[in-house]
Length: 184
Ligand SMILES: [Fe+2]
Ligand SMILES: [Fe+2]
Image 1 (cartoon, rainbow, N blue to C red):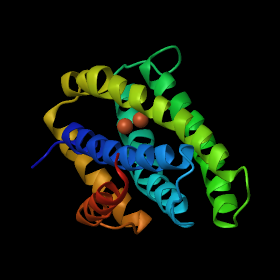
Image 2: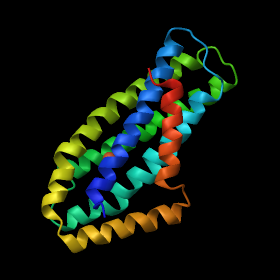
Image 3: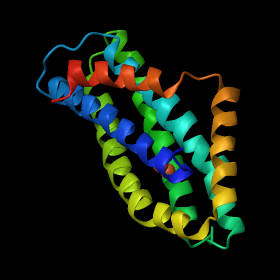
Image 4: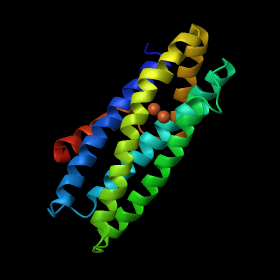
């Protein structure tokens, strides 16, 4: 049975695959190559559902509060920084979503708006994931005992069921297709 940190780390790898597809789409848009009207929105949809609701939701509602209980500081510490970065990311995703709809409507500056917001998001997420993998998740492995880890895994499962989202297999299949079609 994978523990909570392994689950979240694996989700980072899935997010990175979606970002590779996003990077490929952005490169095409920057070169003025055509990308089907619904593809930017499809990538944003994946990020909103999988990265934001599913993954960041588990961190914010479950992992971070448990770490705080174990004495990891929120304000002025790694948790506060991670929360700020999630909010910053949500802002970029909103900009991407607006630009993706404008792109689907055929608005002229939509592609460059999309690329700009996506670039900010990709830069943010790359260093955010790096810090979680190498700092916060290592702290979590050290401070959380086995029963707390087991409780977190259960909480993650309940969270996914409550959101009514697809299974991990569903997202892995989706990201494989996106990557195959668009990763540069
Ligand atoms: Fe995070
Ligand atoms: Fe994360």
